[in-house]
Image (cartoon, rainbow, N blue to C red; front, side):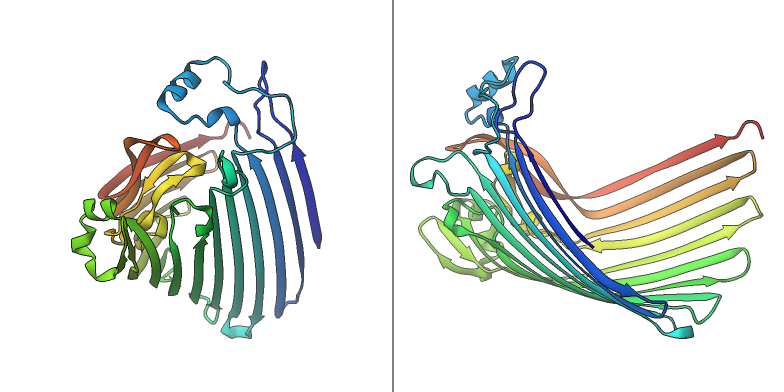
Length: 388
């Protein structure tokens, strides 16, 4: 199959005025081919998506006084004639996606599958700039990812099902320094390796058990410039002095090399008390390493118009969840009660902490933080059928 589309729209409008610089120019195409038989098959897919998106010109207000004027005004402060042009501020995104997957039936032994994924994302953000930088992107990011995974499903026994798999991933992020603006996310390469196994077994006609486990290893190799004032205000000069490569006039060049080991597990049971009532009990342990945005953000996030700050001291999130579900289904009605308790250590979130005035304007400062979180609750669902 081959597919392609083209979309172009000009400025959108409210009932009484135009929303200037809100046009869209979108192009995408994809191709897929392969064959599938009962015992084996292979399939390939590739797509390209390209999008230019205008940002409402009147929303780009720099100083605090301009923001107050904009909020107080009943109409946007900037209204131009209708146009298909997409000027700064604007965004440009190009996304490549490739995939190859295949499978082989192994008779009574089970099924083996393989998948390779490729992604390449390029993001350009244009602010209103002057002089020689007028046509230069404010932010230019390129993220490339390769992922390989293989899974095996065993159906040798009617009472025991086994699923196992491995996954490997390589990711490289390159923020172009030629923009002349501090890069919010640094250069980094990231490696992930994981393996899992799941077992489903029928203990008897009334009880089904599930148990599984997974282990993930993450390695990050990063090059980042920190402002010296920020580096020292966080206490990084004492905690991470060993990762400093070079100290410049007002910056510190660092090379953090980070390793994370994360384990996950699940234990569940499905108990049928009679033909109408079932009880599901599930315990899960999950963990994840902090992502580069949470660790290294330091600067203006143009698309969200806020300054974001990460924290190099973050540890992996570790969550434990217990869920119990009661389900009763009759011919005329059904009742489902689901309750859960979720405990997350080192839960990562982002919150506003300050307002900062820069040469680009006045922006909120949002900071990633860690805390211990507790979530608990219940859902109740009841339905009744009237008539035959």
